[in-house]
Image 1 (cartoon, rainbow, N blue to C red):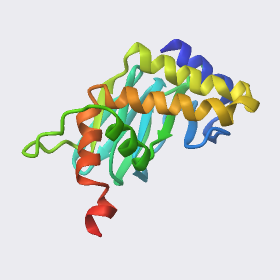
Image 2 (image 1 turned 180 degrees about the horizontal axis):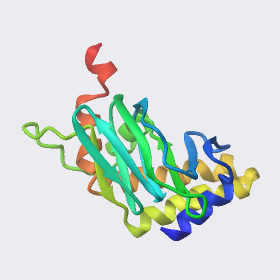
Image 3 (image 1 turned 90 degrees about the vertical axis):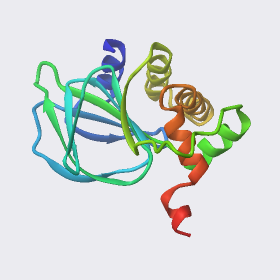
Image 4 (image 1 turned 60 degrees about the horizontal axis):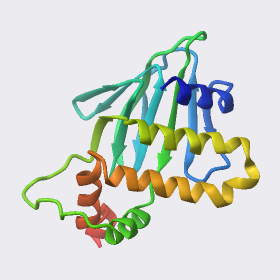
Amino acid sequence: MSALAEVIGTFAQTDGDHITAIPRLSLHRRSAPTKPLHCIYSLGLGVVAQGDKHVLLGKEVIDYGPGQSMLTTIDLPVVSHVKQASVRKPFLGLLLTLDARHILQLASEMDFPQPARERAYRPVSIQKLDGVLIDALIRLVGLLAEPALIPRLSPLIQQEITIRLLSSRYGPQLLELVAVGPPGQQTA
């Protein structure tokens, strides 16, 4: 995790939310705990590389820190704040927004069992990151140092990340999204 924190810190050198040249990737840095903020979490993967984050979803309290990630599959109103951060050791994280159509396409090309209909997966979950996913995230963020390569390599690394998510403990949660469709499609 220290390597991921280091590469995020290289590109997010000041406090705030940093939109990057890589589509759907933002980096986040805070040098002090923050006040609770109302926001909407959409389909995406949030990763904490350093520090701790506190999320309130309805009455449920979710804490996650270094080495953990949060996957959300539908738009969710939450109250979120950075719980642990300092100038010496700031909160460092990233958000990779995922594309439901891309997930659907990849899942259809791969051979996954259909999720059990009687099992409802949560729209938000926390998992420990494994080494291969951390490596892919480091390569994606590190690509910011090579802007000329972003258009060619970013889609490939993001595809790898999506495949790894589908093949991980997050797989059933993402496959349910594919099976039942995003909320907008269900409404239609």
